[in-house]
Image (cartoon, rainbow, N blue to C red; front, side, top):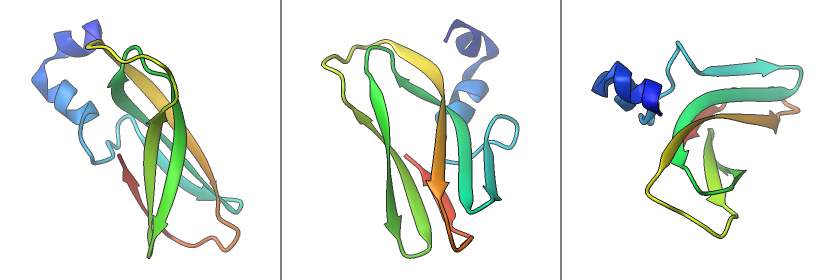
Length: 96
């Protein structure tokens, strides 16, 4: 987080954006799977698992806090989702 803060508000906004950033994030449709990787700002004391929801032609990526704690601290984590896609359908991907 110190590095993000030092880079200024623009970098913070890029990581906290609902949009994917072509410099740090990837979405690949390959071999009957969708591979999604992005950097997100999350609660520094929480423990997360990933969850996905389908709605029409969109996949919504969510994080669920399964830990016992939350705090005011933030951290930057790389989140990775591998989604089974046997029909190689081109979904729109939406991150939380």
